[in-house]
Each structure stands twice: as C-alpha cells, then as structure tokens.
Image (cartoon, rainbow, N blue to C red; front, top):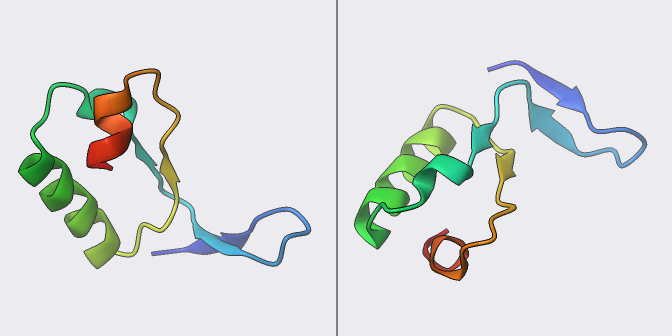
Length: 59
C-alpha cells in the first residue's frame, strides 16, 4: 500500500480509501469483516459520513 501525508497534519494515510456509504443495509458482522479486511491490506482512511445512524453504529 502506498501512503501520503494528509495536508499539514503529518498523518500518513493510504492512497486507497474505503467509502462507507455502500455499507448501508449490511449487518454488523459484514461491516466488521469488510473493515477488518481493509485494515489488513493497509487501508487506514475510511469515509464514514453517513446520514443513516445504524451504519455509523456498525462502523
């Protein structure tokens, strides 16, 4: 995985991110598995802006 510095924050984030919007309708177990896999392959930036409270809770 390639990483870049996020602006002037000094944070190193993956060039590939995980968008959370498509997690709507997934179970908590599915969300855990998806995020776990993303973390395992080096993704450390996840877009979690979601209007649906259940998705945010699962994340």
